[in-house]
Length: 306
Image 1: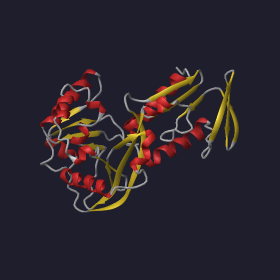
Image 2: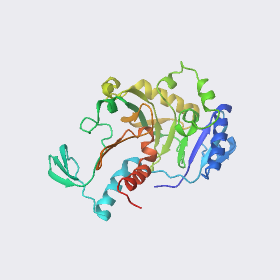
Image 3: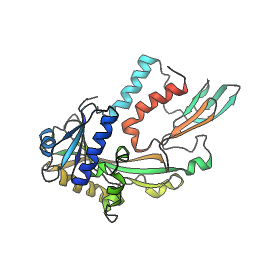
Image 4: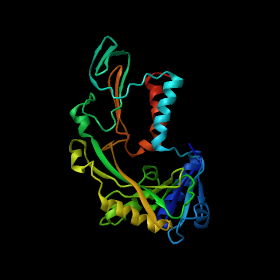
């Protein structure tokens, strides 16, 4: 975990307007953020191209986590320090609920519990959900890359850009958001593919570049070809990157796809099946950013932890 902050960089006056408006909203909510001039943005991130930057909004209180290592280290911490009984590769076949005692049948045997939380992520087939609830969910496919640039940026924290500003949910409360977004060119291929540019640097100087978003109803998720990487999308991501950053040459280290679910309308799918059984999924694009904090608050509420 590194407390290095997040920087949103606007590329034009419309995006800069949204930054000013969000900064004002943050002030009203006592959430710290600081407006930066274009020169201050470039001083913080020297690899930024001067012709791209109109200004920025900096969040100095935010942290960066290594997404690959964090989840494994957190699991190990819970096992060693908190007594978590962790059973990987345990497939639950079914369960019976009788008088507040839940019997769970799995490939590793039977287990009894008092409360049961299904957190199936993208694999909803065995979750106790009705057809109508399933039909309200979308499947989302994203693509990202990791590259090794010739010129190391020494990037501090997260770098997010103009397309991000016009996409991220936190900007939707800005007074000018709907007007600005409605003016976008609907023929823009990056807009059609849900592409926005964000960057994070790994500990060894590689650059994570993302990402794209393609959508389908969950029941039609195979239409997204989830196991195929679309090279054209990667080329669009890299083309947009070159408009923003001066990294010299680069070598592609790896590319990957991801699948997640989100609500067609609403934020998170949280269903109380009965008094002691819950289904929680479809956190959407907020998962990598907010899932751990939201999980903590939700578990406290479910288990009545003060």
